[in-house]
Length: 123
Image (cartoon, rainbow, N blue to C red; front, side, top):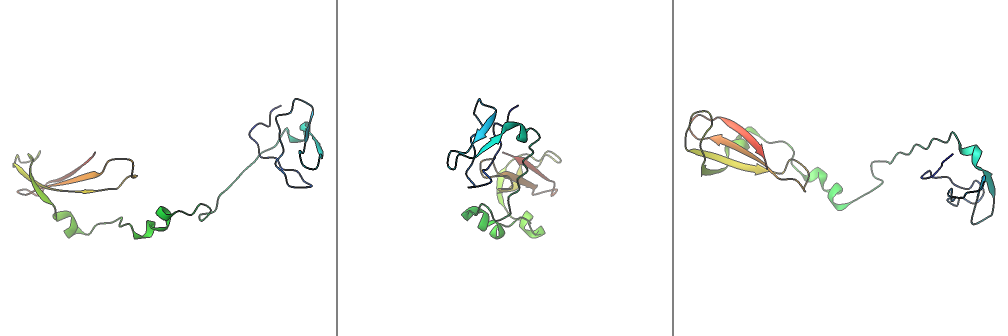
């Protein structure tokens, strides 16, 4: 029987119990209360964190991050020499957005200046 990794607390003092003992019981290091290991054989621990359990500066600013674009915002961008895969035009406009997590590359949106063909790539 193994209760390794389970969070078992003493019913008397609330101390976290050390379940790594080789004996047939678990003893509290604080109040010396003993519990038979057999009473934990069918132990099932379910935990759930509330939405505000781990506040952070980044999480609090999440509401400030713009997640949708207006149609006219897709039309703006810098013009570069890039061949359009649809019509072969040599110029396209592009802009980038950080749509994925911060440790991943940005998404690049391209628009052909001639046929208005649009596509995106993830860097």
